[in-house]
Image (cartoon, rainbow, N blue to C red; front, side):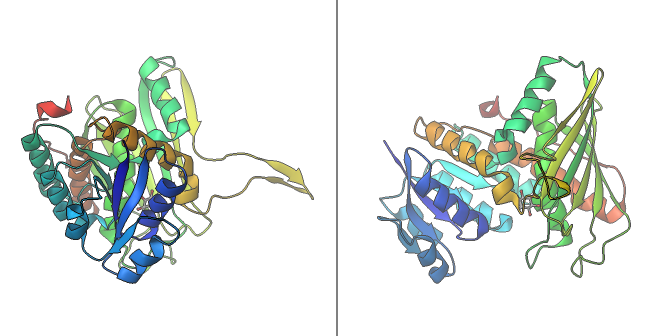
Length: 335
Ligand code: ISE
């Protein structure tokens, strides 16, 4: 059996996944690439035998050669494609965010509930990063006692054109919402955002950096520095404070070199490089599970719960208050 994947969206992440599926993933091939800009879709299938370039997602879903979908369009376009792909009962890998707000994400959860089984895996790739997985295991083992606090740094060198102030929450901090839920195994109960002194390097309309304070059901506090025009490169790191110790992940990585009067390593340029291995493991897990009619990672419920956090976060950006996160009851298919 083989997954014949239609990749919807030939932007930065779509192209990265197309290359990954073509070169490294077992059990899957790129069957179609869709982009509103057909030339971009054509460029993306170059060197991939048997793949077609299309300008319309529906055409790809109706193509008899396609039996799975990877959605890599901007988040606000996900809902429509998700509903169409679910109606065809296709395995779906949907890049984050599932959708940008709770009401639209809940529609997706309801459609999947109606279908009666899980078909959507959401692209929270950090769960597949080796250090994230190791910290998750330490938390669950209780070897350092209870986890008390999480401190996250999330820094990007720059943002693409059209990256709005809301997208600092919806596209960037959405990863920390998922990470906090993944680490604690709890839902998030409130989000607060503080806007402090801003960099001169942010484009008009974006306040950067921002400080986000997250609280979970048991009272674990997690703070996030989201800083998306940090210039120097890309960094995603976490420090976890336990009753009996402190654990750091993600900040620096070898090789560290001493030479010519200097010591140190190299700065990672972007998320594709930082999470290259995690993306490979993520997509392979999806393919393996999809071939057995399941999902191999975060679910539409995780997409919905984080969308509710994003909605609270965007409100909190505006009013500076601690905004509660309210979730609908979890449907049984997610237990
Ligand atoms: C981007 O969309 C991602 O998903 C990256 O992981 C994140 O670091 C970045 O801030 C987002 O814009």
